[in-house]
Image (cartoon, rainbow, N blue to C red; front, side, top):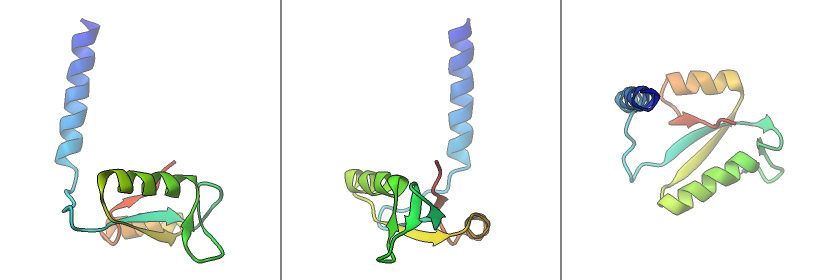
Length: 94
């Protein structure tokens, strides 16, 4: 009985998530808002490029699935606003 309940809840959760997800065309670059000062997870290095553990994971993912990604460094407040205004595709999370 628990297994049936768990499977039902999982199905409902996934179907709700799928309905609320905005599809991104494969040719489009995914813009990821990163926190610009969240060392060692995400930050802007001396060379002006995004760095950190989470940035490395996203780059590895993009390489594996053959997708273009762009990191957009900003503060938490800016990233939330940028997501609401659809200036970025998603927020880097930890």
